[in-house]
Length: 109
Image 1: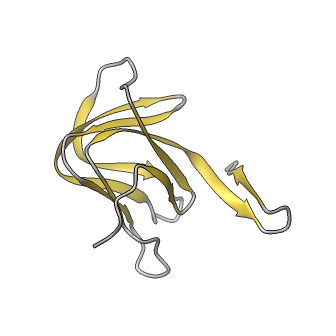
Image 2: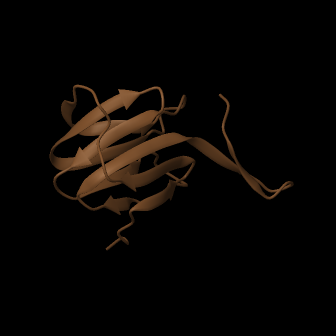
């Protein structure tokens, strides 16, 4: 089984477990694209039960009542599926590693 993580990366997508949900009216879903790809190779949060999600200018916020998975929707060269425990998470902007400067930086698409 995959390791459980409370913060980290899924490819270029960042996520962090936080203590409080942002203000706003949540919508319910079982599947949410947390990292859009122009080629259709999205990073998708999937759960067996519905979870709350709120989209803001500062990221996507979700409240999980049960375990969920971050899945890379690609047939080859995929990122390993990550397991998230119940809690509140913020998904932030895309990042990339620059091997020349050895820095992690935001992706500007």
